Image (cartoon, rainbow, N blue to C red; front, side, top):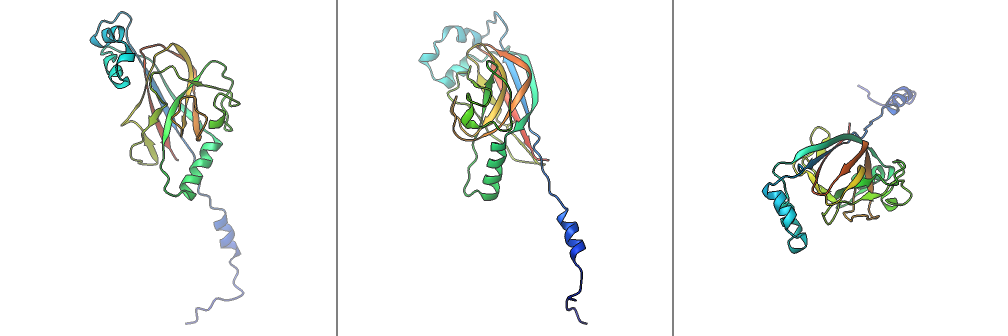
Length: 220
């Protein structure tokens, strides 16, 4: 039987049909912020230590353990979707499709309500506190932005529920939202800005609060 290709065969129809196929994916990232607060006038061991121990005399880890209130309540919760910046998208494409020996490191920061104008897809890490239209908020005693430690990806989703990011708040401030970046430096402008989240309304934090953040990142 002769299987030679007929030079007169027309393959244009199948080629055009295949060219119309698209493999699409989009980001669907959800951040949950939960603010735990000690009740006024609490006299639990943690609160008594908070009042009487000088944080300058012990380590940050030890101080955080001492000031943990065993009667904290949930002051407020925000569960919001984030925007992914163009810088964040380009970084993902570069590291996944072109990267070599790439090690990911991401950190969660907070956005200050003071001076806030807007978030934009064009926001970058280099312009945090600059032309982004928003500045970082650092009302917490942790020495760096809080690391986002992802678990195992499953079903197109990965999150840090196994290692929730915790900000140890040490000042009163109004927070507008948060962001995810590759640099750990507080008020730093290096690295890449993956994305940012806007609260439904600006939220207040006060000294002694524990702000816990879970970020679930999905491709759908």
